[in-house]
Amino acid sequence: MNIRQLDYFMRVAESGSFSKAAARLGIAQPALGRQVRGLEVELRQALLIRNGRGVATTEAGKTLLAHARGILY
Amino acid sequence: MNIRQLDYFMRVAESGSFSKAAARLGIAQPALGRQVRGLEVELRQALLIRNGRGVATTEAGKTLLAHARGILY
DNA sequence: TAAAAATACTCCATAGGTATTTTAT
DNA sequence: ATAAAATACCTATGGAGTATTTTTA
Figure 1 (cartoon, rainbow over the protein chains, first blue to last red):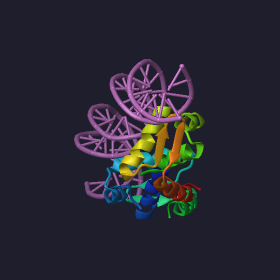
Figure 2 (cartoon, protein in one colour):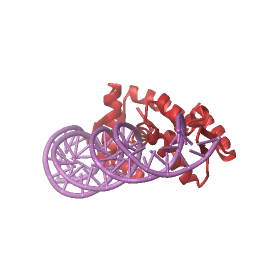
Figure 3 (tube, rainbow over the protein chains, first blue to last red):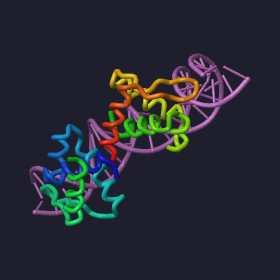
């Protein structure tokens, strides 16, 4: 886990969309998707539920989100 | 400036030696030297004074060290 | 069926390694 | 003279890009 992954995950969770978060971050959507996926793989936890209209945050994701905010702010 | 640079600089300042700090970090001395040099170049500030028996910390270095500790601990 | 995310590559920057040289005590 | 840092060169990894395909509401 690293700061980039936490930051990216936080952005996606807050915007509810990989594409929107990627645009705001000024990076491409696949790059963002890979970082967040990498975090999920490492934690062996689904953090976001993907669907055809964006993403929702799982309970594990919400918990991590709170910690990430603590670290990044 | 990034966390790696701050951490490496702190280790060198605290050990008083690039070689010792590198050994403790488990990386090679040139790799460590480059990171710290990169930080100095970026800040346009000498942080360490090199000599034949290790390094001393400049005033600017001491100031940064205090901030680095605040960030990393 | 149309947004949104995932996949499949390719590329590049950078962190790090080894070997060697330079510097300073 | 010698221990420590700097330099030169090389390699590998990982982060990011574009193009395309797959999903799912």
